[in-house]
Length: 240
Image (cartoon, rainbow, N blue to C red; front, side):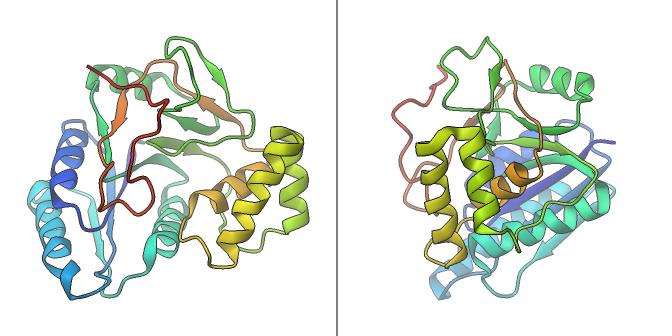
């Protein structure tokens, strides 16, 4: 089955672009999570985002929209959304509001043919040649991704020691220690992010990771409204 998890917050323009493109494809189930406003200034943008989602999905079956009444933040909102989604469907595609499919035919072909268990990344800024497959080397890119696994991703109760051992074994000593620092900052609440917690789960459970050899998505969310990625990485592949 083709299941879609779409996560949004306060960028209705990006939601309109990315979700409308995704909805050009058929989906068996669509779950949308919209985080609540952080303050009064966020309210209009969050409401506009929710309106855009409802209008885009109005006539579609099997759409489940969760609008948070309070702001959970990046870590709690996305983690809870992923846990709920994979508890119901076991496999599916995950997109945030800033990830745009620019090659629908390429993505559809990949979706039809892909049947391997594990994490499939649609984009990885570390791949120098987008026409060549890559190894994850302990990295699990999340700019559009697919997961098929027998267990539900967990975002708590990862032993720091176990995470460090797994990270060093797959990323090397320096890379593993760097990841361990990011993970520690996240669990201490110094970083409001979810991807390091997901990566820790993947590392400690030895989840296979693949990167699509053909780039079908791009990140359109580099601006001041972004939680973390306000500027495009220097080595991002820019599509003409």
